[in-house]
Structures are given as structure tokens and as C-alpha cells.
Image (cartoon, rainbow, N blue to C red; front, side, top):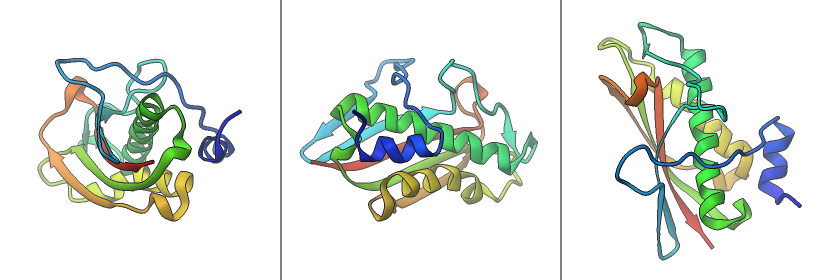
Length: 155
């Protein structure tokens, strides 16, 4: 039976898929004490297709970017579930770091990353409210529009 967090995700039409495997020489997550650090997740859908490809401000809309950030958040949660077995073991979402593949004059990265932040709050309630950094970057792996990493306090 799915836990409370997964039930909240299901109510939004989200079913967690198997966590993506790393594409280089790193691990998908590291737990130290009561903190779980999850490596950056790009905006692949469950079939391995990019939700949004290219640069914000140069062909990718804020809405498509936010959908991509939401997809990154789903991938983060898939990694958390792989690490813990149950999303209900998350005590708090501590921090998200967002990397937005941006044209040089694109200034709305925070609006894009809201796609990930909003999902964390919807899934975890007040425990999902977190510190955050959003950075515009020149490129991302596979020309993904968005990549998000996270830190979670866990039981």
C-alpha cells in the first residue's frame, strides 16, 4: 500500500517510476546521518524522453520550463524512494537547487523552478517548504531545459 505522500502524488496524477540511473561516475544519492543528498535530476519523463529541451528565453516557454522542473522533482522523489523505500520517511525538504538552461537575457528562472517547489509543497505540505537556489546556466546534459538537485531531512 502506498504511503501518505505517494497518495497525495497519485491524487495529482503522479505515479513514481523507477529512479533513473546515473549517466556518469557518481551515485544518485548519499545519506549521511539524517540528511539525504540527491544528485541533480534532469527533466526526463518515465520513458527517458526530455520534457523540455533547449534554452529558456530562446524557444522554451516559462510554462514548459516549469513542467520540466516538475518532472525533475518527480525524478528526485523517485531517488528518495529508492534510498528510503518510503517517502513518508522524509521529515522535511531542506533545499532544492535549480539549474535553468537559459539564454543570456533570461531572468525568470525562479518562475521556472516553481514547478519543482510547488510539487514538493503539494506532496509534503509544510514539510515541503524549502530553501532554494536558482541559477541560469549556459548548457545542461542532453540540452535539457532544467536540472534540479535536493537535500532532504529523513528519519
